Image (cartoon, rainbow, N blue to C red):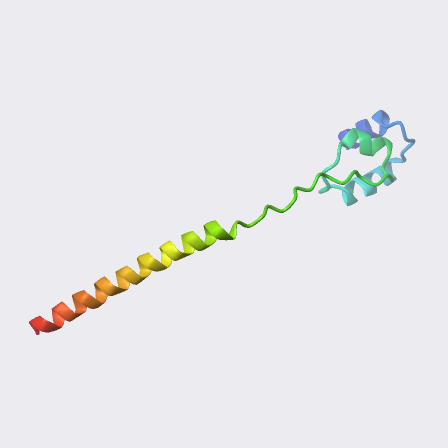
Amino acid sequence: MLILRFLQLRSKLNWSLSNLVAIVRMNLFTHRDLWAWLNKPYEIPPVPYEQEQLKLNLFLLLIADSRIWETWFSECLNLVQKANEFEGYI
């Protein structure tokens, strides 16, 4: 309660305590500058900078994909050869 009273006294806007409590509760999980919001609560917050989407390099993806398939294929061949060798012992 003491913190809300401090906010009320620090604000340039003439808040009633009940309105301040209600508005703070509604905006509790928003990420804004508290002092700027307290003085101008009805303004739209600035839009944060949005990073542009990075471009997908398909050439590197195809190279990595072909290496994965080559490794998988060679492992499968090794397993088949081991299975054939094992059948010869039975």
